[in-house]
Amino acid sequence: MVSADVDRSLRKRKALLRTFLLAGLLLSTVVLVGLAWSTKHIPTPTTGLSPTINSSWQTALKHLYSPVRVGIQIGHERALEHPEELARLRYSTGGYANSVSEVDINRKIAVAVGERLEALGITVDLLPATVPPLYRADLVLSLHADSSRDPMRRGYKSAHFRDPRNRLEPILKQHLDEAYLKHSKLPHDEENVSGAMLEYYAFNHKKYRHSISQRTPAVIVEMGYISNVEDLDVLRSETPAQAITEGIVNYLRDRGRL
Image 1 (cartoon, rainbow, N blue to C red):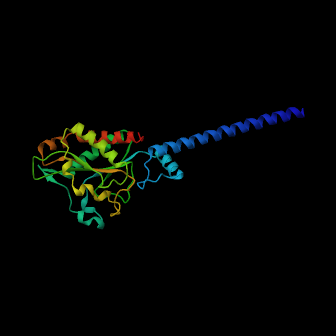
Image 2: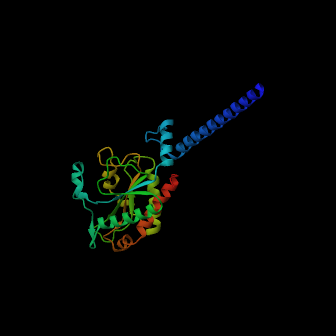
Image 3: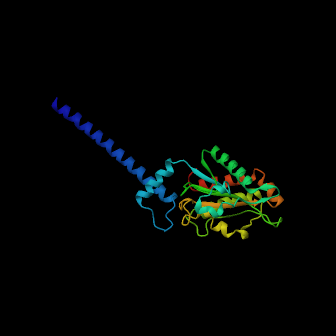
């Protein structure tokens, strides 16, 4: 009778030990997969140093559990509300041509893009000209429409900061350019990318407090010329919102976020 009790006790201990071993193996597998995933999908710091195991794991958890967030800045929206550090831009209220205000075009397209992204379950922040200090998201896109004294000038262009603030900005720009040029059929106006675009204030985290986090890829786009009647027809259509949404979604899928 005593030996039977001892035998049952040993079997229980062995079963419990096997359970603990299996749980430990499962936990180790999850940790290793998470670290491998984060190393593959998460950008390394711009210094070129590999992220630490701790930061990689934290970033992997963020990507696994945090909602996808996209910031869409409406170019020149509420520019008069700029803080003191951006006071010189308070009267930068956008272009006006053919009885059309640039801000109205920017806002209409931004809202349309936001609705399309939200329908896909993506969190969207519509941002005014003043962005929150060190704003963070999966990406930020600043929407603008151009104007010129030459009514024949037309086309689309885009830019990230002159020296990319992170390695994802050129990738985001490529996806946006491909989608927009394909759908809009506008010429590529890249030779007219301005210094103001290449050093866009909202991306200048070294100079301004109200700017986007260095880790957030950001691109500014000039969607077409409101001073050109052909471009204006495109800007008034659903094409810009369709193209921009496609570019954003393609980028997010490329990053494994959708």
